[in-house]
Length: 610
Image (cartoon, rainbow, N blue to C red; front, side, top):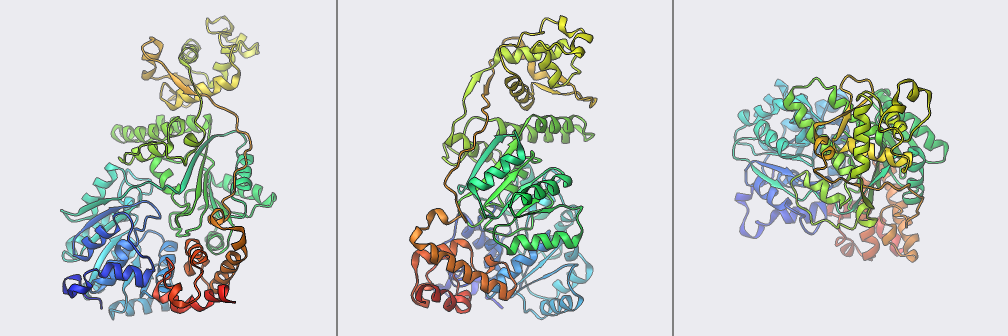
């Protein structure tokens, strides 16, 4: 049992920092971690919003080790529970999980340990937590706290809605004296309000840390030959490194994975249509092997705690900026340099616009979804700092000029496209607002195609007025007009383009339109990041770096865990910089706690001492 902070003597009032150092091996808290920990340790309720990789887990794990009783952690995915419990056990923490996939004997042992007060933390899915049997057990034992992870799942406005989360509000009524903390990395103002209303007791404190992930480089590229662009990006920037590639459809995930494999890039597919055994096998490979790429639908990744994912690529538009932020946040959880690449084209814009137009949702929901769509398309087309635009959606100001996004590193060229845009709008109107982009562009270019003549469109005033620009420029203009809401897909779903109300001011000459000038991408190699630490490793230290990784791999294989459970890359990098000769010196390395020092210290010292 752990003493509550109120009973600690004066010289131990900084117990959170002591646990951070001795158990987890870190010297200082980050961001608002300490504030959340103090609130929950003191018995108060809290909502904590922190970026992926920002240390949310410590905000309930440390109070769990300081307060009396067992902490119950609600987690939505079995894989996530398993990874977090395995990692905690390697820190010497008494952690366990309960889920439907457990062997009955293991489940009975976990339930026995829970009833006997032998657990510091219990991870459980919301469905199992709310069973009568488990709730009755919890009422009979001391409880340190309830932690609700991925709390945005409660919101119907969020991108990972789980109706089971809606029922968790009853915990506050049934256990009124147990502090509750809800945590998420993704929540706009609407979602935060719903979390507070549905999950936490009145008066809960809200702690919002910066959502900025400065180690992630954001890039948006015009989709040309998407697979070749992906292949060149991997070869140039991340050869031999772990990454996630997101595709819209199940079929695409399998085709892209096979296409990469044929070219010597180790890749496996993941989607809900695969058998459970295949999904689990591919996920386990991704967790345990270095340099494997998973090509997946968004069904993959929410429960992944792998810290050394070096890149995330979206081959299609994500659902929203929240989804984009959450999915790209799976890269670089260890704080080392990582990339987020989004490939984006006219068909993506048309598709998401058409989905919105055909939605049968009520007006309020359609309005909210339209706002989210406008924000996502605005992010893709913006000419300023990506980080500034992304963080603004989460109500966080950023000065711009981040120096780590494509627009800051290679500022895009813009041009006054007011007159050409009016030509497009006029041509859409004169052709009857029922033809697609290719037909409209054919009219503007003065095409002699039979269909143009048959429809009489060669007699229109807009016929041939756009010959001064190539087709690629007109395609760019149409895409950006769609993105900015001046035109929209035919609501009847026939593939045509219609004028939107927003275009009136442009047609009347009341406003100017400045667009980004698309440039065809050329293959530019940049210094590879290697395994995320390579850029920081002196060539003379390369052999020792590989020896540290080999030592970690040997231990991980023997224990049947992913390598990062032993030590993160960032910890190995810190070892390389400190080059410890004794266990005392090893103890000073960031990420080496007391338990891991005793368990692995000698093995890693041998790398330096022979």
